[in-house]
Length: 266
Image 1 (cartoon, rainbow, N blue to C red):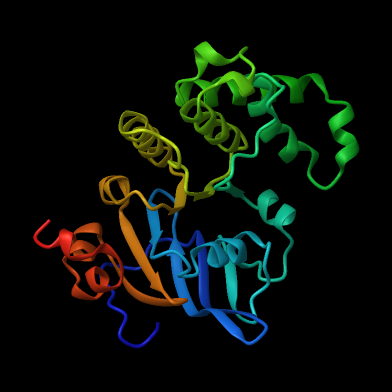
Image 2 (cartoon, helix red, strand yellow):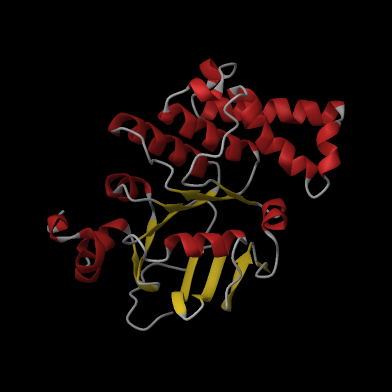
């Protein structure tokens, strides 16, 4: 653990764990010795100012970046050198800040892609044919994800015609349908209004109640403080604090670096 970083609570069951991760781009150190854990059954928040290194940490967790030092462990196995697709097959799903949906396809077909990609794995020709059992598996997973995310009434609508809020839910339903026990969610409330954000938060809590773990990068501090169980705060690529939302709000270090004076007494 980095010097000066505060820690509270007990060690949770292993899910996603990064240990002493350092990432450099040329002579610039974007992430410097960061460690964090995102266990099953918990929403873990990763917050900090723009440019603090959050996306770099996320990309290292998912395998899009290889660290210069440190390790990434997934459910107790070292996956530091494992490609993103292989990490997905081992249970790690991810959404991106920029919506990555097939706008000309229906909601149900978009959500089905989350299941089909897992069934195909590293053999893309499997997308061309599926067994009756696999088709039943896909249909069941899609129906469950649509119901969980409140999209039953939209299942046959074209995704490109939906509002940003509904499209965010489609993206969430797609990764939920994939059955991943650990999710990385990158700015999932971006573009949502207050009511949509509240509803989105309730859905995330339902997902976690099933035993899924979530690592969340999010700038909406109302949402973060409402739904997260534990927080990590980074600044200039360094972990400066970890603790519960209440402890984070009370931290002078965090207020000075990120939350600001308006959080005083909140």
